[in-house]
Length: 152
Image (cartoon, rainbow, N blue to C red; front, side):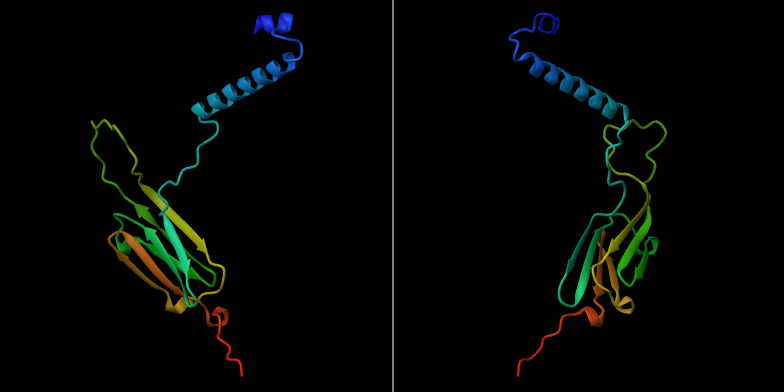
Protein backbone atom coordinates (compact mmCIF):
# COMPACT_ATOMS: atom_id res chain seq x y z
CA UNK A 1 0.00 0.00 0.00
CA UNK A 2 2.91 2.35 0.71
CA UNK A 3 4.34 1.84 -2.80
CA UNK A 4 0.96 2.33 -4.34
CA UNK A 5 0.52 5.72 -2.67
CA UNK A 6 4.13 6.88 -3.14
CA UNK A 7 4.59 5.86 -6.76
CA UNK A 8 0.94 5.52 -7.84
CA UNK A 9 1.65 1.87 -8.61
CA UNK A 10 0.73 -0.08 -10.76
CA UNK A 11 -0.47 2.70 -13.06
CA UNK A 12 -1.61 6.27 -12.64
CA UNK A 13 -5.16 5.59 -13.82
CA UNK A 14 -5.79 2.80 -11.33
CA UNK A 15 -4.54 4.67 -8.25
CA UNK A 16 -7.89 6.22 -7.43
CA UNK A 17 -9.59 2.83 -7.86
CA UNK A 18 -7.19 1.21 -5.41
CA UNK A 19 -7.72 4.01 -2.90
CA UNK A 20 -11.47 3.48 -3.15
CA UNK A 21 -11.06 -0.27 -2.60
CA UNK A 22 -8.83 0.42 0.43
CA UNK A 23 -11.45 2.78 1.83
CA UNK A 24 -14.18 0.17 1.35
CA UNK A 25 -12.04 -2.51 2.98
CA UNK A 26 -11.40 -0.29 6.04
CA UNK A 27 -15.12 0.47 6.30
CA UNK A 28 -16.02 -3.23 6.13
CA UNK A 29 -13.46 -3.99 8.87
CA UNK A 30 -15.02 -1.29 11.06
CA UNK A 31 -18.49 -2.75 10.55
CA UNK A 32 -17.24 -6.25 11.27
CA UNK A 33 -15.65 -5.03 14.49
CA UNK A 34 -18.84 -3.25 15.51
CA UNK A 35 -20.90 -6.39 14.87
CA UNK A 36 -18.56 -8.56 16.92
CA UNK A 37 -18.73 -6.06 19.81
CA UNK A 38 -22.52 -5.97 19.66
CA UNK A 39 -22.86 -2.35 18.58
CA UNK A 40 -25.49 -3.44 16.06
CA UNK A 41 -27.69 -6.02 17.79
CA UNK A 42 -28.71 -8.82 15.51
CA UNK A 43 -32.47 -9.28 15.14
CA UNK A 44 -33.79 -12.26 16.97
CA UNK A 45 -37.14 -13.91 17.22
CA UNK A 46 -36.75 -14.30 20.97
CA UNK A 47 -39.50 -16.49 22.35
CA UNK A 48 -42.25 -15.17 20.08
CA UNK A 49 -44.37 -17.99 18.68
CA UNK A 50 -43.99 -18.64 14.98
CA UNK A 51 -47.36 -18.16 13.31
CA UNK A 52 -49.18 -18.76 10.05
CA UNK A 53 -52.24 -16.66 9.19
CA UNK A 54 -54.55 -17.82 6.40
CA UNK A 55 -58.09 -16.99 5.31
CA UNK A 56 -61.00 -18.17 3.25
CA UNK A 57 -64.31 -16.41 2.45
CA UNK A 58 -65.69 -16.89 5.97
CA UNK A 59 -62.79 -16.92 8.44
CA UNK A 60 -59.18 -16.22 9.28
CA UNK A 61 -57.06 -19.05 10.69
CA UNK A 62 -54.09 -18.51 12.99
CA UNK A 63 -51.72 -21.36 13.81
CA UNK A 64 -48.98 -20.65 16.34
CA UNK A 65 -46.22 -22.97 17.54
CA UNK A 66 -46.20 -23.04 21.34
CA UNK A 67 -44.34 -26.19 22.45
CA UNK A 68 -44.40 -26.78 26.19
CA UNK A 69 -47.11 -24.18 26.83
CA UNK A 70 -50.35 -25.22 28.53
CA UNK A 71 -53.69 -23.66 27.61
CA UNK A 72 -54.11 -22.04 31.04
CA UNK A 73 -50.74 -20.26 30.59
CA UNK A 74 -51.97 -18.35 27.50
CA UNK A 75 -53.68 -14.97 27.43
CA UNK A 76 -55.59 -14.39 24.18
CA UNK A 77 -57.25 -11.02 23.61
CA UNK A 78 -59.48 -10.26 20.61
CA UNK A 79 -60.33 -6.85 19.15
CA UNK A 80 -62.37 -5.87 16.09
CA UNK A 81 -59.35 -6.09 13.78
CA UNK A 82 -56.83 -8.32 15.50
CA UNK A 83 -55.72 -10.69 18.20
CA UNK A 84 -53.03 -10.74 20.85
CA UNK A 85 -51.37 -13.92 22.09
CA UNK A 86 -49.19 -13.66 25.18
CA UNK A 87 -47.75 -15.85 27.89
CA UNK A 88 -44.48 -17.01 29.35
CA UNK A 89 -42.27 -19.89 28.28
CA UNK A 90 -40.61 -21.54 31.27
CA UNK A 91 -37.65 -23.85 30.84
CA UNK A 92 -36.38 -25.80 33.86
CA UNK A 93 -32.94 -24.81 35.16
CA UNK A 94 -30.33 -27.43 34.33
CA UNK A 95 -28.31 -26.91 37.52
CA UNK A 96 -25.48 -24.77 38.87
CA UNK A 97 -22.51 -26.74 37.51
CA UNK A 98 -23.85 -27.21 33.99
CA UNK A 99 -21.73 -26.30 30.98
CA UNK A 100 -23.80 -25.61 27.87
CA UNK A 101 -22.51 -26.84 24.52
CA UNK A 102 -25.48 -25.40 22.67
CA UNK A 103 -28.31 -23.24 23.98
CA UNK A 104 -31.06 -22.49 21.50
CA UNK A 105 -34.22 -22.72 23.62
CA UNK A 106 -35.03 -19.48 25.38
CA UNK A 107 -37.36 -18.82 28.28
CA UNK A 108 -39.25 -15.63 28.90
CA UNK A 109 -42.41 -13.70 28.31
CA UNK A 110 -43.78 -13.45 24.80
CA UNK A 111 -46.45 -11.40 23.13
CA UNK A 112 -47.63 -11.50 19.56
CA UNK A 113 -50.05 -9.00 18.06
CA UNK A 114 -51.63 -9.99 14.77
CA UNK A 115 -53.56 -7.35 12.85
CA UNK A 116 -56.14 -8.61 10.38
CA UNK A 117 -57.21 -6.72 7.24
CA UNK A 118 -60.96 -6.74 8.00
CA UNK A 119 -63.28 -6.70 11.00
CA UNK A 120 -63.92 -9.99 12.76
CA UNK A 121 -66.76 -11.42 14.83
CA UNK A 122 -65.18 -11.29 18.30
CA UNK A 123 -67.94 -13.39 19.89
CA UNK A 124 -67.34 -16.46 17.71
CA UNK A 125 -63.54 -16.87 17.93
CA UNK A 126 -62.51 -20.46 18.68
CA UNK A 127 -59.08 -21.54 19.99
CA UNK A 128 -57.61 -25.04 20.51
CA UNK A 129 -54.18 -26.04 21.76
CA UNK A 130 -53.10 -29.52 20.65
CA UNK A 131 -49.59 -30.98 20.48
CA UNK A 132 -47.99 -27.57 21.03
CA UNK A 133 -49.87 -25.87 18.19
CA UNK A 134 -52.48 -23.21 18.91
CA UNK A 135 -55.16 -23.17 16.21
CA UNK A 136 -57.60 -20.28 16.15
CA UNK A 137 -60.62 -19.92 13.89
CA UNK A 138 -61.62 -16.28 13.62
CA UNK A 139 -64.88 -15.66 11.73
CA UNK A 140 -65.07 -12.53 9.61
CA UNK A 141 -67.74 -9.97 10.46
CA UNK A 142 -70.86 -10.32 8.30
CA UNK A 143 -70.33 -6.93 6.68
CA UNK A 144 -66.91 -7.96 5.35
CA UNK A 145 -67.85 -11.36 3.95
CA UNK A 146 -68.22 -11.50 0.18
CA UNK A 147 -71.77 -12.12 -1.01
CA UNK A 148 -72.81 -13.95 -4.13
CA UNK A 149 -75.19 -11.86 -6.23
CA UNK A 150 -77.58 -13.70 -8.50
CA UNK A 151 -78.00 -12.17 -11.92
CA UNK A 152 -81.64 -12.04 -13.08
